[in-house]
Image (tube, rainbow, N blue to C red):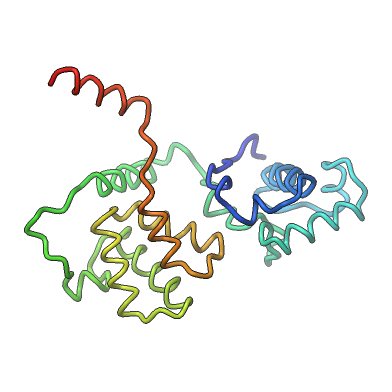
Length: 215
């Protein structure tokens, strides 16, 4: 039984979430808690209604509204929060997950050298013989962009451009957020998303100010 779950700040930019009424937003947050108590799946309607302190009829109507808003899904296991397993990791102490996180962080901080060509080789563009993160970027990116009407060749060129400019981790995060939000024009949305300058952290600002003081 989970005692907590991750609540992602991306919901501040989610049209699906921000367009909810106050009542539906409260129900969504409460139902996420209920799902967390039952391994990511809502229990029976009477149990769920008891957790919300509402009638079964009112609870069923709220659940249907959130399914219509694509914030809950009907699955073979039952009714689950949308993309629950993707956002809620099983363990925070997994050494393999920590290792992958650190590798992603390094890929974001790496800057291509001036000798790098603007065009990628066919093998690199296809994601063949590439690290898992790179393969995921191309696999998920091509699937998302071609579904919106983009040709595969154009999709791979765009993904390669985003990778060079912003790194694999940032590109993959933008692709997954676009998919989760069901963005109808992902190319424009992802381009704008990646062009947004990240907010300077308190620690980075202190380091910058210290360096400026020494100059």
